[in-house]
Image 1 (cartoon, helix red, strand yellow):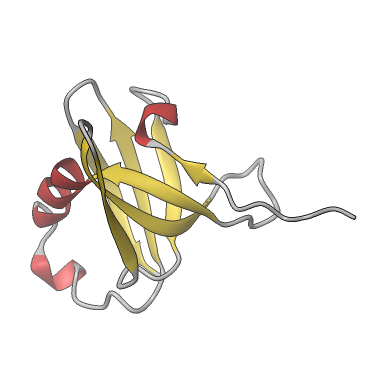
Image 2 (spheres, helix red, strand yellow):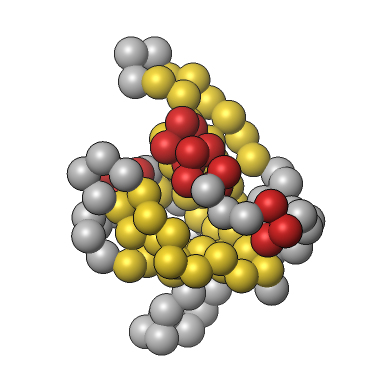
Length: 106
């Protein structure tokens, strides 16, 4: 019997300096976690959006809390109004920052 296991993708597993597109399934539902000696993190249910991946498989995307909060606050407030619908984000991780190229409410 095969059991499904839920996957978490950590920030360290995202390749640096590459644009990655994910869809946050329900952005209003997030889990904030405090990891001792590591800091605060926020987790969202998400899935990759890619021309090579045809099947939707959800996972927990874990972002560093302060970095994600700072990046989201840079997005105009009129684009951040409806957090109950899925949001498509294209972002790039650098050594010190996170850059968002596209933010679209689906």
